[in-house]
View 1: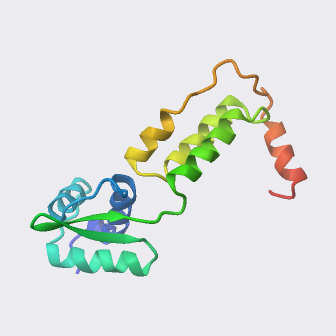
View 2: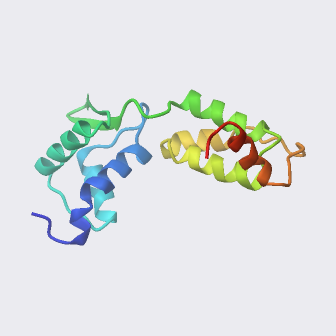
Length: 151
């Protein structure tokens, strides 16, 4: 039974921790997961976390546990977009002339939020083309999508 308001959000926080802090190269031990949940004010024993990770799998999050030493490291495997796809999208946004610099930054921030912190750092390290002619009129962005039938 949840012991407080934060406990009711435990699954949400756990999914957020797993997607932001793990990827194929970076996993978390049970103890690390517990510590990260504690930062959100949630307590969890090891046994309940196994059930929670299983619930996240049922909800579609690809949780993988790999044996390392005497324990396991858990990470998210397949995500909605892999790092190569996100790099492609970030490049397309950065190089697009009809998207304002402000809108480009907003879109890139949204794209990097779909990656782990480690992958997001790689995306942010990409070469930013300074001095590229970008439109100053944000309405062009919306006009292009309206012409495509996307609203």
